[in-house]
Image 1 (tube, helix red, strand yellow):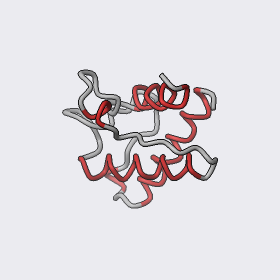
Image 2 (cartoon, rainbow, N blue to C red; image 1 turned 135 degrees about the horizontal axis):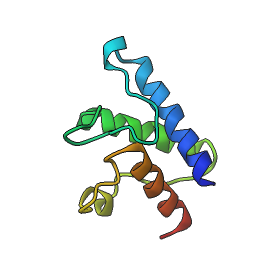
Image 3 (cartoon, rainbow, N blue to C red; image 1 turned 30 degrees about the vertical axis):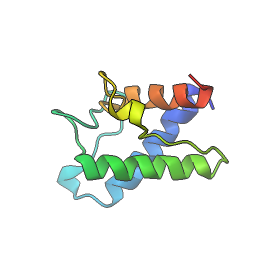
Length: 97
């Protein structure tokens, strides 16, 4: 998968997330959107739900990957901080880094 395809997939998952949120709690869909942390739009349950949606979308393309493994959860720079870091994290996992 290309970087742009991964980003499109994350955007689609965010659109799913927004379907279950009130209008005033919508998550902006942008590479710069803060996902998790002090400025993040998602709490821990929201993040888990987003990651599961992304994993399911990847599985639909016969790509099995765990986005919330031990290494990701303990990383000094969280891959879940914003959309760009999440896309980069997924890209690295899919390329085997």
